[in-house]
Length: 74
Image 1 (spheres, rainbow, N blue to C red):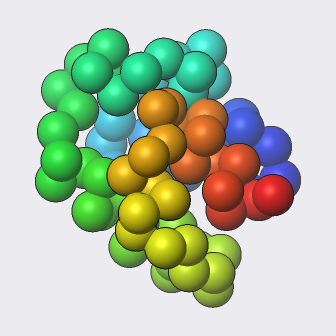
Image 2 (cartoon, rainbow, N blue to C red):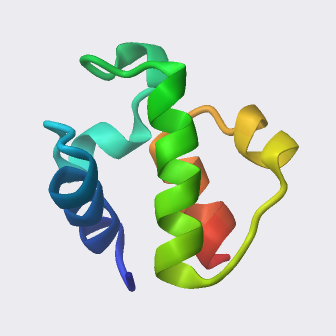
């Protein structure tokens, strides 16, 4: 997962989210079908894929998928 495009592809393939790279900057409340269960699934997926753990409070403060991506890659 080297780019935001890789990140979005992972979310589409593994979580079944119908999003594009441009959607990553949108707020979670603007993403079609997004709910809190997706956030937990996202955390598990990213920890499994990257081998990195990011504290839940940091993720909960993230306003968008792009912000979550930056937490894991930054």
